[in-house]
Image (cartoon, rainbow, N blue to C red; front, side, top):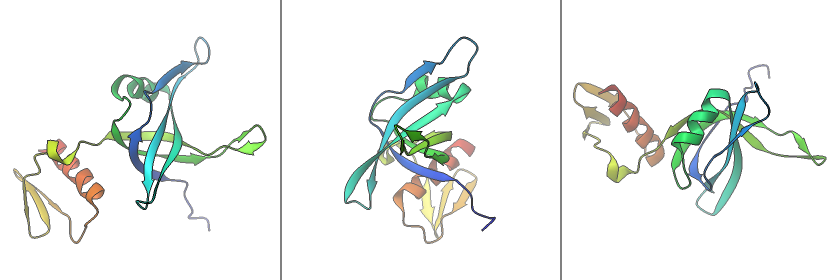
Length: 141
């Protein structure tokens, strides 16, 4: 059991503009917002997201209500009013563009080819994973 890791990856849409807070002079700022995501296409779930320090400033400036993002972070559940309060402590974020905004290049033989870059997608059918791969490829090319 020593190999267990607290690592969460979640994609969804911001339900509000991020709010930036400063606890006091000289303290690190933090930003919060709620992320909405679908649970197996049956219902919409919401979870609070928290970013600290420099990322908090970036999140507050770059993201807005309705933006679609991929969040990576740690699951945390501190007690609030004596009850566990589930949230994600964000480490990184990646804005996700809608597929109609992407120039994906050519898809051939289970690979995405853009310029001189080739990304093997194998038998992946998950649209979100493919979009992430496309964005990664766009950054390289």
